[in-house]
Length: 379
Ligand SMILES: *Cc1c(COP(=O)(O)O)cnc(C)c1O
Image (cartoon, rainbow, N blue to C red):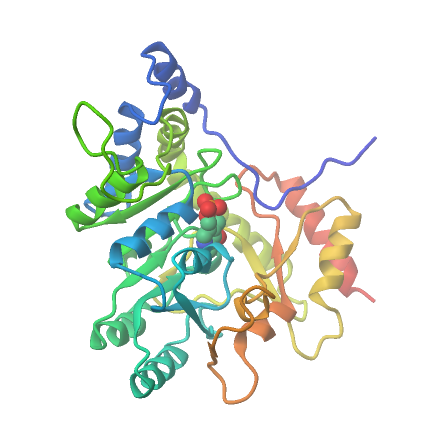
């Protein structure tokens, strides 16, 4: 019999999603308009503690709208975390702006305040000040916002928080997705909750959200005929997908709790191996979207080898995000490092492994993953 595949982070429905979808069918709101959309937006706002939200087709489109609202134009510079998924910076290039990649720190895996300060000093002397800074909360761990926001505020540059992976995470008692001027979430199939595909931009600036909403609906001016004064985008989420989101929001606290348990389970079961689970600094309370670890520098076993061995057992592990400065399409852009020599992103990428972390995992699944990992180190 074929072994059941253990996925990295599969969708996990709560049970109420179909009720909202049925309601959409029954009332014929089978379109990018309808009550599920406002309901979903309201639920996310209430949960994280923000005033306004617009639901869109992806986290990527949310970042695009956020950067557009901030006024990113051709030739502008935008600082962006280097160790992340390409979606964090693709939108910068959509607008023909110029990304400058900022290295990570070991404490959070996220943007290094030291590298950020270095980048601002350099930009100031060269007259290349950025229009925005995109900070990411990787694997559900918050960046160090006290330090990062102090720097960005001092230089008066707005922040976009890419909280695609960190819905439900906290930093010093405050939810992730509340730290920037505009913040975004993703509801892609592999995230902590999903709408099968979707995203959201949130802000306390009502004007900002209204404008992003307008652009997401093709920039259609109100009136009886079609009038477009600005370039538009077809980015609005459908009322069907928003219905899935309404159901998922009801179980989000459970999903966060379960992922935290999974991390603790791995941490305990693997505690004697030459690896380090993601560090959690004081004040940070991750949602542990993924349970991740790095192999110790002195250990000859590579991350690549571990992922390959997991695959042989039909278990989906992953390497860490490959930093943006390594991507052929982005390699010519500037990269400001945390270290004098080398950089943190490459080191984490070389040694990092993401473990299956789905909230629907059973104890047998977890034991299976643990035993395969232990076997790799047992030689
Ligand atoms: C998933 C993800 C995104 C993009 O979200 P989509 O909804 O897939 O467009 C952006 N940034 C990070 C860090 C992500 O993990």
